[in-house]
Length: 422
Ligand SMILES: [Zn+2]
Image (cartoon, rainbow, N blue to C red):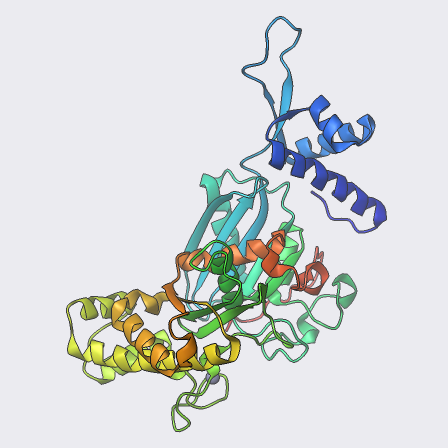
């Protein structure tokens, strides 16, 4: 589908959406049945269908069980299961995760690949493009793509965003919906390659959204999500709405101080939770205590072997995490806490001390009302949240900024604006 602006183009997109929605709801329909349901004029409907067929959004099929002897078998129209409607991309610190959903709003596939932390934005977008191309064995058609939802590390969504790129790096502000907020390099590069709007948000908040729609907290109206990965962050669903905060800074649990005398943090603070509970912090502390582990799977293996050093370390880290969760719970009052990220793969050795500290420190009245769960969507959670952002159908997003507030593009810039990744 194309994305020209203007009232006529909008009307046409509305008609396309109507036809797609009917096919989504009713399954395969003949032209006559579609005509009755959509109430569009025959000329308009045939015009819209021609466009949808040409982009590959819709395909024709001959009804196999059509009654014989009544002329030609009826030709029906159906959503193309291989046509991607939305792509979600999570640009994590050291990996790219992608997922796509088709026009029937079914997940058609997801893929991930790690990369060095210093890979440029050009390199990350190249990788994302390759991963998207690999979905459904390379058979994913993008003619009907409506938008891309992208998660990036760090604050997104305010004029004070520290990680926002220098405005002089951005494309012509006249081509972005909001000149006050320069496009992120990922938005610029993806907009140019795919030719559709690119919606941007914090990747951990998108993971929280994914878990609250499809994962461990599905159906929850008050959810606290914590991700323990190379960074420590999270997201909040409050009163049935994903919470963003005035400057997009909601859910930065990793930067709550747990030790005022502690180590300096990348955020500029001191003794933040991230300085003790990130993957690097935990592995460094383990090795400093005499343990041997190159990565989280090796640490997890040590805990399964009941290695005392590992268990003692995770007991302490879990206590810190539980203390922060208890404080946030007392402020927000969630009913569900979801813990995700690679470090959660250490299992009970970490989760049990988290739960003990949480239950010891949270207000006694809420102690037995809280449900602590492991995340279920794995590394695809952020990319799935990006898709949810594009579809904007979840009630969790009913009060969340949509379209223009999050989008850059479609962009046709001549000057590239890559920026080294962080
Ligand atoms: Zn910090």
